[in-house]
Image (cartoon, rainbow over all chains, first blue to last red; front, side, top):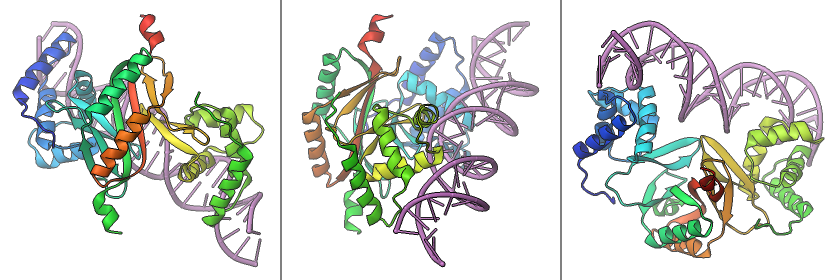
Length: 152
Length: 152
DNA sequence: TTCAATGCAAATCGTTTGCAGGAAT
DNA sequence: ATTCCTGCAAACGATTTGCATTGAA
């Protein structure tokens, strides 16, 4: 994992500022969801996260609020859609993490993260060339992971 | 456009072989869809393609058959899912085209194609490093295109 | 007190599927 | 003759939305 130390409380403070700037209310659900996603501590699909919250946690947040808040967190920059597969969206908590992309095993669903500064740099050059102002990107490499190749 | 000359008839012959190898039937709908997608001649969403076929063409193919056949064409390698945006899938006809990736304008939906051999090479290296056997990849850079930046 | 957020259930939208009739082998 | 494919409509699953209630300001 390319995880760095993150101060979740600090993050909640920033998110609070973000909400106030947008004249939105700083609710328990919204702040709780940050704790919950931080606790979950891995890539997630919303359905999965909703069930995990319902079954394992005291802090409850409804499905609709999770959908709505994840959208806000995306806008805020704490969460990203990283994989689109089989009409499902896989998100990750990105705060405190360096940028990375993903290898996705189509057999077992395993997700391998990788960092490549060179690829990042080349993308910037491409954008410059087209006068394109990039907001975010997603590089997914689909294939068969080492383990699945062996077990055939 | 990074389009090269393609012989659609040749392609249909290859697809026929592909179907026979799979013990599937070589139907009019399946071959017609190749002509239709070739005629359409740009990135497409299925809904869009289905409507276009219904309104503009004599050769009719139903929505379900389009969905089913596009899947076959993906397996065959003539069609690719290139962009996932707002829960929609954007496909392209890839035969006779060199590999490329996409800049996607989130304002106007414009799609800009680009080729970068260097990025391709770096991806191969990454896969080698992880003993990952790549099948296909998708690099989407979302942002604001030149025109939309100007018109603000 | 006011206005936005929540939770629920219903609606929506892209996509898939069951099935009866029709076409390919 | 057999088997697979098609088109339709219904089903599905992820996501969004309307609305009455609750909570933040």
